[in-house]
Length: 146
Image (cartoon, rainbow, N blue to C red; front, side, top):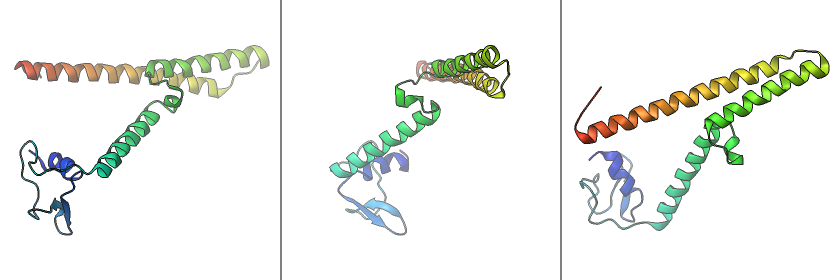
């Protein structure tokens, strides 16, 4: 068991203590936690648990916001849809500028390029997730294929 796993328990326990030289320690032993799967003396600190949950949710929302270019605000989290929106917006702007003003603008080409990039990036990430999932399944089955 690694220290990070143990700290996830200790940070939300009423019996946690702090040693300036060692960091978070158990107030009962004044030592780092040594349990294997769960601590027999663990008592949940409700306030610390709520704060940890709120922090985890905020980090996930920030990650999603950045990954979706802000479209998560509107409930759009699919990268293919986001890429298509950029692509379609660029094409409409390009055609509208050409028909309406008889001019070509640089921005539609940038939008189209970013839309294509976003679609390709999403397909690569999807393929990586599938490959990682297959590796985990193979590992659980006892067949390691690298």
